[in-house]
Image (tube, rainbow, N blue to C red):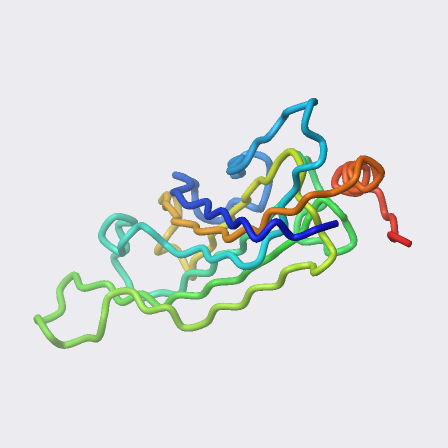
Length: 186
């Protein structure tokens, strides 16, 4: 495996999704799809990624103060279950993002801080992964009380990748691993 010193950035928006919906195929977007049977030696490694709320408190229609929590996951293959499970090799990165939201309805101007504040962010990336054909982003959003019930949201994302050249033998191993097998490279 050789670093080509080439970098790629993926960015965009995902959603709309309903709050209180568990991570699932229903709230997943394929953000990279590469299929070239003549070039099995090209691969990528996720260096870093970020996801943040694109919808404002007004877009969501929040009428009370509340907390919002988002769980995100990067996958190398379609997943029907197994979300938020670090033992599944298809899952290569996770994040948790928490916001405090202050509804501005009925409050005098200037009486509260920013309507939406990020209060906690954590990201985890498996160091021993390679993306060859596909990268999916899954998002789940939950909110406190009934402030988000039946509401939907949008999230922005940015993913930073390094490009690698791999051998045909490595390609076979990484391809199997990215489909859910538990393999250790020798």
